[in-house]
Every structure is written in structure tokens, then in C-alpha cells.
Image (cartoon, rainbow, N blue to C red):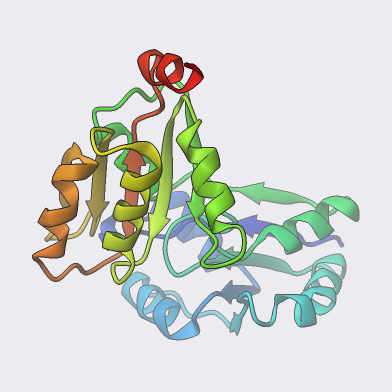
Length: 233
């Protein structure tokens, strides 16, 4: 009997954002792979689900990949979750999914919570077309990416740590210009959710003067036609 891999999104903040289907899949799984078993134990206890948990994160996914795939081949139903949101979106998951695709093992990805969609929609910036870049490289390749973002003509979304938010906004101002519109969303779905909109020039002092906590999504306006013409001159 062939097993199955389930990609299960988990709440990004408010635990009520878990879907009924996600609860059902987690309850039926033979094994749950979790980015951090301590965080996931809290969620599973809240859901009254008792299932075996195994760590699956960026530091061990290469080492345990073969064993997990073997379990699926031998009939196990395995659910993959991350600390928050959808696995594979700036979280571990791609390697396992790719290997299951290669071996033609069944995969089901459930719809559910992810931070960049509410941040994008809430920004008030055009979202009929957009680009998602996740976390920028910290060192090698960062300048190259910032130059690329300066030419991006669609709204784009970045993820950032609260400790590096002001640095990111300052870099965006340097490469994109002070008047570029943006929106910073943090603590989405939680009690202290905040969505702050303005130009990069306005956002930098606002976040420089306060203690910033929580996961952050930064939504930035794309390069407009006037900017393109100016840069071409």
C-alpha cells in the first residue's frame, strides 16, 4: 500500500485560522514532520491531536530525506507542517516535495494560512500582478537583488526579521527612492496586528522609534512609468 505526503498550512498567529480539513489530516497522519517540535506540540495540544512528531528543518532535511520518502513508499501517511504558514514558502519543504514528485508518490497540498497574501491585499497597492521574493540574501547576492528590485515594475513582497526591518527599509530607500510607497505588516492575525502604510521616507523613522516584534511582510510598489522614463534618460 502506497503512502501519501500532505502539505498542511498552520496558523500564522491566530490558532482559529486552522482549517477543518487540516485538523482531519493531522489527526489521521501516521507521522507529522515539524519545523520545530516545541512550537508544533503547542498547536497539536490545542487541537487535541496526539501523533508522533519528528523534526524536519533546513539543517537536517538533506539527512533524513531518504528515510521519509521510504516511509511514504511503505504506506505511511505523512503530514508536513512548518512553524507558521505554508511549508515551502520561505520554509522547509521543497526538497521533500521534489523527491516525492520524482518518485511519483502522491502529494496533496492543503490551502490555508500564509503571511504574504493578507499583507499584499491589505497594502492597498496593486495586486492583480505581483512578485514574491521572501527573505533577501543577508550577504552574498543582496546588492544584486536590491538592484533587481529597483527595476521591478510589479508590486513585490519581502519577508524580514524585526531586527533587520529598518536596515531593509533604508536599503530600499537607497535603491528605489524615498518616495516609493510601501506597507509593513506585522503580527498578522494576532491581537497586536499592525499594517503601516506610507513612503519609504515615512516608514523609516516610524519603525526606528519603536520596538518591533513579530514576523514581518513588506509590500512595495513597483517602478512606475515615470521612474522608468527618468532612468532611461
